[in-house]
Every structure is written in structure tokens, then in C-alpha cells.
Image (tube, rainbow, N blue to C red):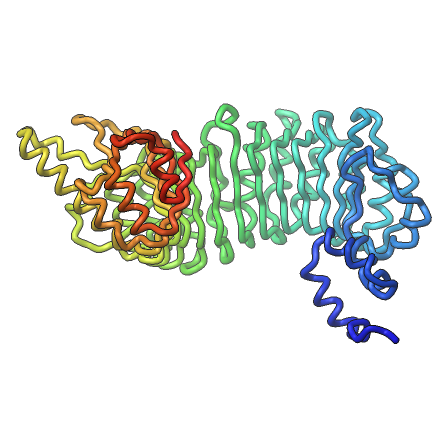
Length: 497
């Protein structure tokens, strides 16, 4: 008599399978014959040999389960297995055999596999490094009509293959390129026309590009994709090119769906940044990460248009940034959840009567300086002003009762000249630490490069009022013994500087 669980209809099994991983599938196929029959197809959905020392399954076994394969990794795959027809293949990862050199890579088997799977293949990931990818590969990939995602990791695109490669990029929905090199003739101006627009792309991610030529071609290309939802451009600092011009007809394209922007070491003009922000409708932009000098005063004005929708705002390496602008954001962006900026002056907070409206903020990252005004020359008056600034700053932070991460470290680049020195926020009860008593959800405290001095009374207060605090990072001078032991006594891990 069959067990009652074996009478479950296939639709229920399908729902159960969505919550299991490969390790759990392997256990399920060993329970009974019925379970083996039910779960074996799911076990074969992702097929690959991660380690070349692993014994490959027999040809007959793979042929028997070929219809179940949806994702295939060709790394370390014997040629006879690549010759099998995977009729429902949707994701393909192409990587070199770890025990073979790049020149010995079997491209012909890859071409045949691509041709056989052209009608179903939706995603291709390439992890071939150092040598240029063959032109035939791009020609074959271009013939895949339903391809939606292209992922390249440290790949080199040759001169002759560049046009076809760019044609492939111009029609897929998702492009993720990491550390690629685009070899291209200096006089090949016609290639720019290929990059005019991509009406299909919804996500383009270019990470740590190490080729100036590739950036100069791809930045206009990214700006020319009107239906993007996610835009990410970054390059390593030493490869950062000069300001990249954006054609006017591309810069002013409407971008009705763009909700995520990440720019790092990518120099575009402030005018292009303004047009980018102005091309996004209100209540669409959710996340903005800027690690570039493109965010000048005019761009900051355009940024404030999106004050009612932005939830994550991280700004670094911006010479035009001021403490007043940061306070303006804190007082006018009510939906902020995380914010990161180079610095904030407590005296500017004291001078602004408007309350911070971002009451749902759970991550605050900015160096807090409590120094007095440069105009204050009297020593006693300066001391009283700094004490007042600390109290005001603590009061503002104390109202962010949902904070889980408080980062007041100096590591983000505080490059503004301060004539009367730097005076970070002191994490002591004598300075106003008790104003943060309501931050019961605080889990991480980061105070690197701020030269904190704390005593047993301060540590005990933290343990009493911050029950969820898990980690403290930064060099702390502890006046009553060892800081690591003191924090461990209240269940907090000390990470040091």
C-alpha cells in the first residue's frame, strides 16, 4: 500500500520543489522510488561539473535526463556530453576547462551547442579570460532569437568581433560585463552608430571596467537605452577616462522605468547628470549611488525632484558636496532607508530648525564634525559652542529610532579644509550619548579614525540601552582596562580599526 504522501498531485510537488536546493533534492531522490521519479528531473535542472576531478556521469545517464536540463555549465565537461541535445536549455555558462589551456578550448562543440539550443536559450555567461573571444562565437550567439541576458567576466573582445558583439548587446534585455576589454580600431567611428539605442534592455551592469575605450563606447550606449530599470557603471580608478561626452539626442531620451543608478569613477558632465535625473519621472527613482564628481550644484537640484521616492542614497567623491546639502536631504527625503555621505557639520544642524523627516532610516553613514565656527575666536565660547553642537547632533540622531547601523567614521574621505581642526562626535555620556537611548535596534557602530575615548560607564550604558548591538568597529581608548573584554562582557564583538 502506498504511503499517503505519494498520492499528492503533481502540482503540489511542483510547489514543494520551488523551495528546495540541490542538496535537499539529492536527499529526496533516496527516499522511495516514487520520490526518485518525482525529484530526479529537478535535480538535473542545473547540470555542471564544478571540479575537473569529479567523475562525469555516463553518456547514457545524461541522455536519459537531458530533457530536464535547464541550466548547463560547460567547464570541465567532456566533449561527448556537449554533443547531447538539450532541448529545453535556457541558461548556458561557458568557461574553460581548468586542466586545459585556453588554446585547447573546444569552441566547435560550443558552436554546435549554441546552434542546437538557439530557439530556447535565454541567458549566456562567458568566463573565458585573457584571449579574445572568436568572431564565430559572436556570430553564432547573434543567431539566438530569444536571448535575453549576456554576462561576460574578464573577457576580451577582438577587433573583428566588436561589431557583432555590440549588435548582440543592442538587443538583449540584461547586460552584465565585469572587467572586460573591448579591442577596437581608433578610426572605427561607425561603431558608435551601433550603440545609439537598445529598446529592449532593462538592466545593464558594467563593473570595474579596465578599458578606457570600452567605457567611452558603453557609457553613451547605456544612456541610449530608454527602457532601463537598472544602470550600473564602474571602472577602476586608474583607468578612469576624462569626461565622456553624451550625445544630445541620447541624453534627453525619457527614461520612464529607471529606478536604480550606480556610477563609480565614471566621469560624465554635470549637464549630462542633470538631463539623466530630469529624464526620470517623479516617484520612479529608488536608489542612487554616486562615486563620481558629476553631482554638482545643478545636479543636486535635479536630485531633489525625486525626494519623495528615493530610499537609498550614497554619495562619495563629490567635490561640490556640502554639509548644508546633506541636511537638506535629511529634512526633505521622507522615504530614505539608507544614506551615506562624506561628512556633516553639527553646527549646520544647529543652524537648521527643520526636523529630519527620514524617520524610517536604518543606516546612517557620515563623518560627524562638532567643531565650532571659524569665526569664534574666544576659547571659552568655542568650547561652549562645540558642546552645544554635540547636544544638537545627538538629539537629531536620537530621533532616528529605527537605526540599525550608525557609521560616523572618517574613512569615506573628509577632504574639506577645517581651519580649527577636526572634532569628531565623542561617544561618551558626558558629551550627550544618552540622547541615543531610543536606538534599541542598533546593531553596528562604526567609529574608525575618530579617536574615541570611552570608560566603563559608557560601555555599561550601551549594553543596557542597545540590546541588539552586535559589532563595534574603530580604535577606542578604554580608560578602565581592555576594550575588547569590556565589549565582550555585554555580548558585543570588537573589530578594531
